[in-house]
Image (cartoon, rainbow, N blue to C red; front, side):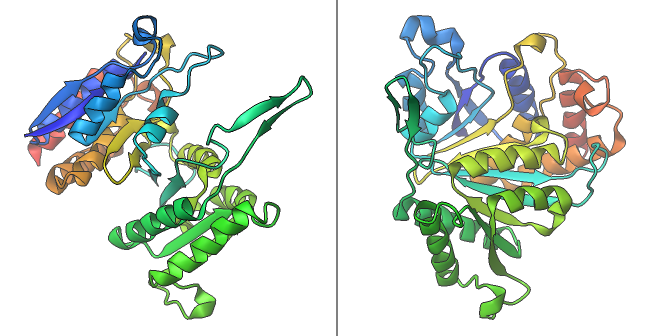
Length: 344
């Protein structure tokens, strides 16, 4: 039995995490869910949306999965997602983006992963006012953090059978900060045997780099050409959402935040309070995040069962949620997925 921290979240969070738990159980994995509450529900009591007991639980169990958590706007609280990443040193954000047959998209063969540096860049939170005249944010790019995330991306590329590793940057303008990231990318990729084509790389595995605005354009024009893309924090935030829009939206996309000691898997879409309690939310994002979690803990067979069953449900198109053009409820979708899993 595995002990895993569960953060249900706000809004539709409890509904989609309930569906996720049902599906994971059907796959045959025995998990003791240690449920802890974060978000709006605990602010009044603890004066923070992220009490210490949440962090303590994740540190103890090493693995957590979370639903969407609301961060109040304009009230001075840090984003729960950002705080988790910083406090637990979850330096790698991993967002696989794949098309599913049956899910409406202009594309039919996308299979890429965005690897985002999670701890620094413009999200380091170093900012201040210059009187009433300006606000200033300091962008931090360090060699150790850049080396660590590119090393992670190199391993991920090899372990998942991808051919192309792309570094994304804006070194043509930010020559010092992004220039450092690009230099590190080229050196670490080379040290890991992932060479540029010009340096004699084979067609089976090679590296290249692209400026971030060109990356955005090319993701829309020919996303099928990308495999693994590694980049600083802000670019990863923007491009991962862009990429999700190519395959059905944030409701479809899983996410993992991985560090040396802990890993937190999450649905990155909003808490959608306007539909909370109506049993109509799409739980695919957190179910796919659970697939990533199962692979992380070594439960490959169960992860494969869930993924194969998802493909069947989407291909048939009979029991999908409203955002995907169907009329199935959250629980009906989960029930159908469990039936598929049981039949395997």
